[in-house]
Length: 233
Length: 245
Image 1 (cartoon, rainbow over the protein chains, first blue to last red):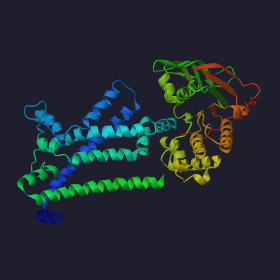
Image 2 (tube, chains in turn cyan, purple; image 1 turned 90 degrees about the vertical axis):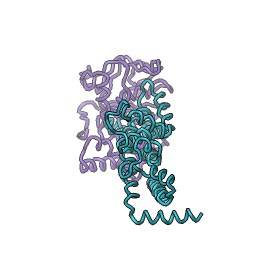
Image 3 (cartoon, rainbow over the protein chains, first blue to last red; image 1 turned 90 degrees about the horizontal axis):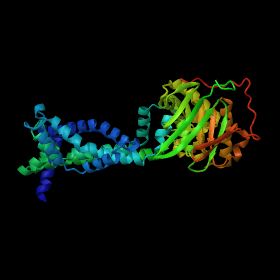
Image 4 (cartoon, one colour; image 1 turned 135 degrees about the horizontal axis):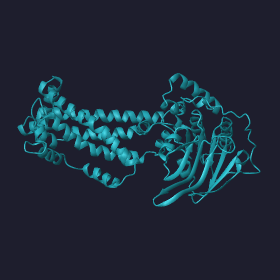
């Protein structure tokens, strides 16, 4: 018990003391995950909308496909991407292995299917009359799409936050295609794994605290937004 | 131009709609003119909603010849032409997650109208519908009768050439129903063609210009509803549409 207490106090000291190494790790995590999320969000929302509103052959199969991908372990995505990006792999020429870009691609692949599945459920549960009402009042299809998304914004935001939680917390893919290189590709989760194996619990706990605070902040923001909408409705 | 000397808003010949291998609509001929109230009756599943959605341009027909304002158009172009000019109202209206005023302004906003003119037109429409006191309220918090009036006003402000109403008074009580019927008469005065689908035509009969009846997706010969027809003041009737941007 004492060990944990000492390590936690030391961790808080590291965080407040502005430890350069620690904060560079946090910055890498945020920059990689936010960029992956920024790329995946429009793709996922458009795909989910098409799956919910358009009728085309293979639609159900695609929904099942995304629902399945939602549960794929991060290490499996890491493995496949590693094979593709390694020097002898089909995309080896790009020299992306062990770069933040490789991590972004991996995290994109991890969060996109999850966001498609959740956003699809949200579009399906939403009122399909919204789309017709917007069109019949003269909105162009893209404008009607924004109207539908605006009216479903809380469900869709929850889908995006779930995507963010998935990528900010994954270890396997970042470790395999990022390589855990300090000041380059070392992010919060790969650093925790490393620090723990070295017995440096204070740094591990400090980084764990950052993750927890991030999760808490995001969920409080979502709850606050939803609470506000209920008051105004 | 028609034999009566009026350009039809929409003429459709041999209109067909197929869903899941079943013929949902098969209509030999249909013609909509300005300043009419057209009653559309038919049993459940006769194709009333499908017809209204085709005429609104929300569903593309699987076959047929279309003329909009006298110009022949392909099915796709006719659908695009109709969207925004022909406004469809659901049985229970969909209210955007916004205030009454913002709901009514929606159609003007997506047309890129400036905030100033928009506000003036929305205010005028609110006054017309007697909704002034609800302007700032969240539309989803209103009663169904009030929502239906907001939906009608949201259409009115666009000066649609055709208004397609899908049993919109089915769930309303007497007062709201009368109010909606009065709004429809006012719309006809402005030159709008109001196509009204209903189970219960009785309260409307005094105001109807034409009666269409659907059976199994086919239009039973369109008849002028003889005794009940209110003579239309065709001569000198100039539809008084506000400018559309």
